[in-house]
Image 1: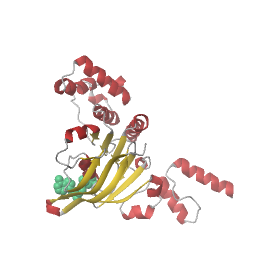
Image 2: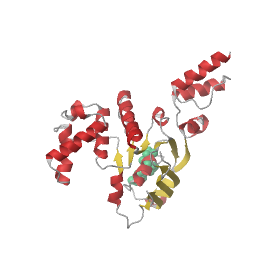
Image 3: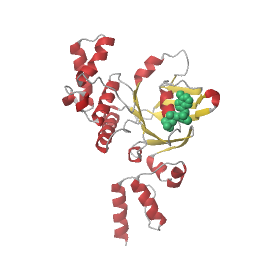
Image 4: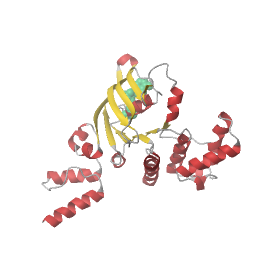
Length: 282
Ligand code: ADP
């Protein structure tokens, strides 16, 4: 993170049905370059709409979005240039089942951007390397795990050289191993290449890994802060119908029983450390 603002959102509003449904109702925030922002909130609270507005897949009904200082809600702005800088990854990702991964990846550059097969192959192999899947280039989609398929989706997005990747529940359909490998891939791209990440998840153990957590409820950004600040507020989160990581919940219940544990335990390691300190104090 270098402290420069990547995205600024002012009074962002998305209403449907003439204002009957207020999917987003006045969101104000700033996302810094290189940040990992994790968006949580109950179902139907506006998380997807927020992400889709950032990319103008949904046109806001009010407010402004500045990307690298440019107001992308201004009709005069060429949104396609902006979209290239912000890759989007969804829950589902479709590959052509009868083609190898490599073939799937070179078809668009060859057909749409008129790249030669050699050029497109070289680029695809570089992209596969960045998500750690170069050894799967000749496999067919059915031979890949869900996590690997999502990493291919991320590789596809990297082709646009995005400054930012926006992911709408990329791990929702995956088993724990797949979730872990997708999160590790995302985090490595952030750490090693400085790519800004904005990610929706329902998994609180993923949310604690962000630099900042956004809580969206009923179209409003009701909480934003470091995971330690957010998850220390167990009661407030529960009020929004959200869980906290299991270990945070355990610490919270133990604290209620009078056991003197810190209020911001997010990982098993932190819990073990805190319990050992208690033990040595006895
Ligand atoms: P989340 O991602 O948090 O589950 P969404 O952003 O998908 O929530 O939806 C927020 C609200 O906007 C919900 O009430 C949803 O039903 C409504 N909504 C989303 N898309 C549309 C649409 N195209 N037309 C009407 N209402 C919509």
